[in-house]
Image (cartoon, rainbow, N blue to C red; front, side, top):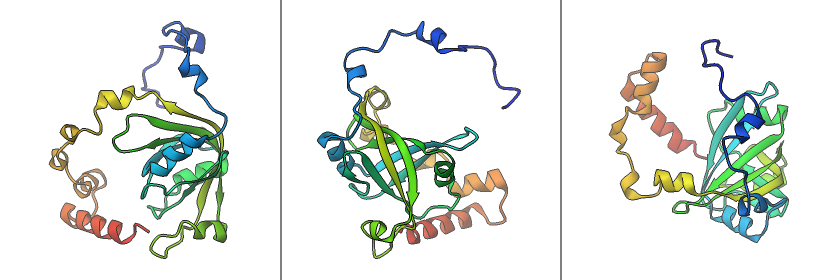
Length: 210
């Protein structure tokens, strides 16, 4: 832990609860122990999700996953299957799952303010027959994340409403920040120029999507 981090504040749940009204009504009743037809339909329309994990030491991580709508499978009301597409091979998410199976998922649909949340326990599989169903352009993922569902429910839409995330007017021009190549060049002082880094990133990412 960073010794310079601020100390104090709320130290227990009781103190925290004193600041907020108790959850009630739909907020409490909406939590399902499994997927229903609406959850499965939501997953089928979603091209993007984030998965939260934590390692055996408790260190947390959140990672994005995205592909064409329906890239995630829900073969039954208790299971979600996420193919692991090529990435940077850090394997942060997969390593955490091996050490600690507890995961949280949030699914997004562009234009929807509603969010689907799923909590459960994950495992990594490399079954060739299963993975073949997730092939794209003839390329089969090396593994998939199989999540046993413990909870599923629609999350309150207020965060997306406040952020106005899907509105055209909310889009930020890309030149508002440096390119990734420029940022990496500043942060880790690589030998290549910012322009060379960015060109390489673009080429490799397009070539290695699957």
